[in-house]
Image 1 (tube, one colour):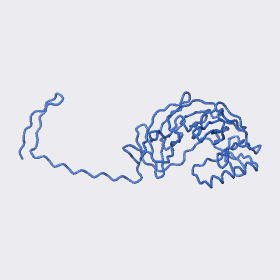
Image 2 (cartoon, helix red, strand yellow):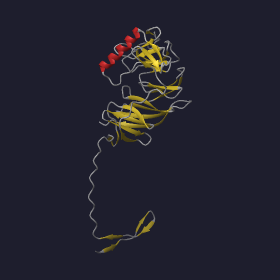
Image 3 (cartoon, helix red, strand yellow):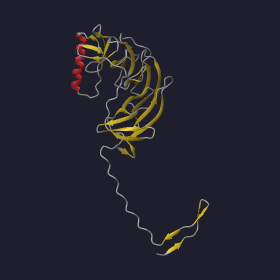
Length: 310
């Protein structure tokens, strides 16, 4: 084999010498790409979003699920890992009342339901079964067991007085409209009103006697407890609103930039953190981590964009 001396090379101001073989080695054959494992995270150069998304949480990380799979997101590093489908997120930290066929109970304390309220609850549940929708809202009650909320079904949503066995007359916001949804929040109800096909939901906080508590907000989205003293309501136009659980006082709000009509969900991560999922006008889905400090306005701390897989 003949060896040839190469001239001195200068790179970045450093002199070097090199030798070369007259007959170069043949390049190694390229390895075929590894097959994609079944059930892996769908990607489009980066993790991407399927249709009909839901949001949950596992190990303090948001989890996005679609019809055939789930992925846990590392939002800070914009990475995703395939995971089994987790249980539905728990919306309330404290015990919540159970509305039975003829009574409402919190632990061992129960109050009977009147005939009219029992019939209204049964009719709503029958309607829900007939529609067979997995995300149908449920009948709820205040923790003082004084009122029961029946969500929108065949009839408009209502808040019923347990003692009086009749619907309470609720005060509408300035936009008027009809009661669209009701969700029990401790001793309060978050009541959504709609005066159009949407999005135009206005939310009023109502106590168990039907009185409005403090200024209203925007509704149409998830409502859940944050800690022992606060709860969060995320509107259909992606406004994050933080309220005092006992009084209904608005403690802070944050305007996000969601697209009306896109996927919307939000979950609690811990006492000071939530994750919000919403659609964007560029056909993508954003997952945003929001810090909800004890005092002060909620703030976005990190975000991850999932382009549409199609």
